[in-house]
Length: 131
Image 1 (cartoon, one colour):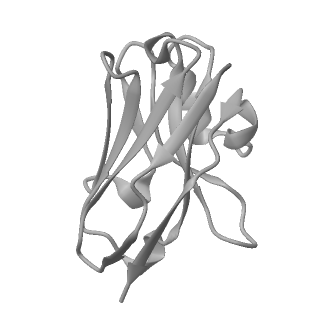
Image 2 (cartoon, one colour):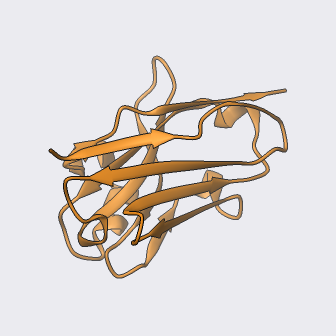
Image 3 (cartoon, rainbow, N blue to C red):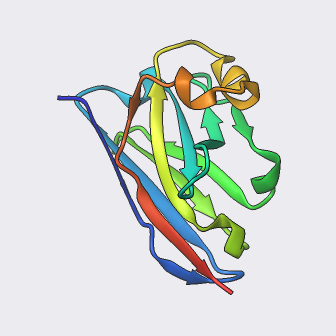
């Protein structure tokens, strides 16, 4: 059974850091491009970052220099390291995968329907940044 399970979300103060994890099972994560998205109630899900199968990455402008995406093939897990967190980063964060070669993340990052390009989603983890 294909599964993506996010974890690591919690309450953190402005300026703090968090590392989110996305544990994959039922498939080999490195065979897929994967993305991190976020959503707040009443707003569309937006792409935060995306990693292609060749290791190239995309970052949304609002997280460049603050967030870093990575993965551990041995653990079949993706990570989103977040630093210098702001209250505007408060959201539920999701990981998602897409079976497509690079540079799919370029399209994920620039599409008006980036979430619609992804094939499978986790259930999300809540990040709350207090002011």
